[in-house]
Structures are given as structure tokens and as C-alpha cells.
Image (cartoon, rainbow, N blue to C red):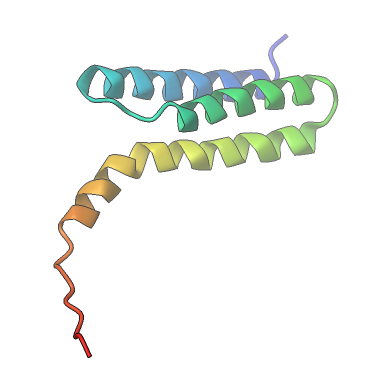
Length: 91
């Protein structure tokens, strides 16, 4: 029988792995954010099956926000490159 924790963690894990593989084929993305998402999905799934539903859901929501950060990261990098140069006055 599948629980909400199984489905949520599996979908989040597959989405983050797909995003990592797509970015790996085009560039060299950092591994740690995707590894953190995978470990969080594993722990949340285990915790949800062990009876810690509230804590498991909190971990999965946190991993979802981390995934959104990974999803939006390249656009943040290009936005930061387009900032005008600030000059400082020397005293």
C-alpha cells in the first residue's frame, strides 16, 4: 500500500534527479543541493513509515522549497550578472 509519503518523496526525488541530469548534460551543476534533496526524501519517507507523519511532511515541504531553489538558480545567476556596476567614492 502506498502512502502520501511514498508518493511525495518519489515524485520529488524523480523530479530533482531529472533536473540534475538535464543540467549535467548541458553544464556542470553543483551536486550538493540535489544530494541534500535525495537524502531528505529518504529520511522523510522512512520517518513517515515509522509514524512521524508531521515531521516527515515538514521535511518534504523543506525539500520542495530546496528543489524550487535549484529550479530557479540559473535565472538568479543570469539576473545577478546583469546588475550595473556600482562605483565607490574614494576618500
